[in-house]
Length: 207
Figure 1 (cartoon, rainbow, N blue to C red):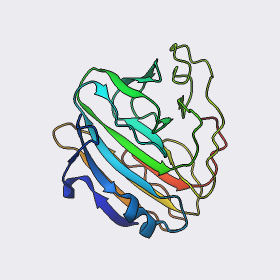
Figure 2: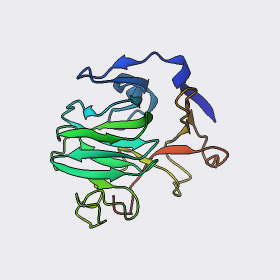
Figure 3: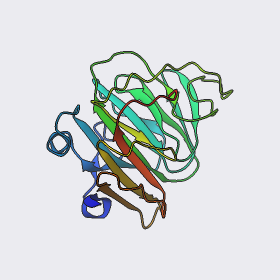
Figure 4: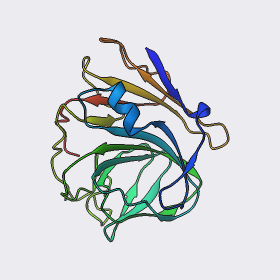
């Protein structure tokens, strides 16, 4: 396992809309060198301290994973998002953080994507995201992610081969620790701490 980036070693930068701060672990240019052949991608950690709109980022497929429960409004529909449950949407959609009980962090994966289809759905079980009602009704669509794109999963089996990056998640507000590692071929995903896995390959489950 090879260390790639650490939250503690990076300085935060303002959001594109000035509404908050984020710490970039991997930038678009860096991703091309790290994972040649994949669509360019960006991985960052946002500090969520108040409600407000997200930056518009057309052409990017986004995965948002909060470390505490929040509520997002996506194109006029409010979705409760449980802690450590990824939500997918496109950068051109109108997204705002509308409820935040306490300050927390959010892991953000952004992948260059030519698709303009609207997606607002949860990557896990019955949480209400994708329904706009909190009822858990299914109104998303099947993932169209191909092997040339990086995906984010947590708490699920992942392929033993291909590109596999692991982000440790220790989200204490005062002493946060997020570290990105690259797994060796065949190496098991560590289970000592909470981790988010970034990997290539099709996700067969509905997201």
